[in-house]
Amino acid sequence: MAKYGGGFGGGMNMQAMMQQAKKLQEQMAAAEAELEDTELTGEAGGGLVSVTIDGKKRLQRLSIKPEAVDMDDLEMLEDLIMAAYNEAFAAAEELEQELMPAGVGAMGGMLK
Image (cartoon, rainbow, N blue to C red; front, side):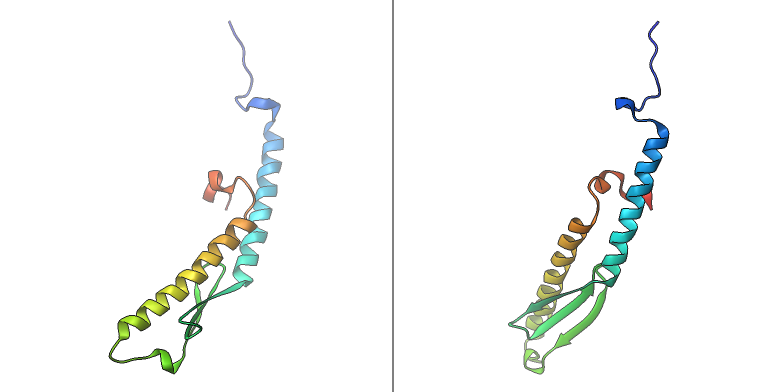
């Protein structure tokens, strides 16, 4: 009859796995803190509209220059706001990918 150990292949014991998980948690906490403190700005219409969000993608500021407002074409203003936000959002996504430790995608929220 065949015997097999633990189920954690590669000889990694439970203590080592727990230490690795703790280290990953600490790295994630540091990345989350940096995201909280970082602001990213997107602009549209040559700077007529700017949107500033934090690294957690929460809106911090919205700036609309008066010349961006045409009461007969509010759809254009809406498009400028969306474009500026999407630019800031993309920058936040990129920053998040840079800051998060490798392998977090697979473990997701398990370590929080």
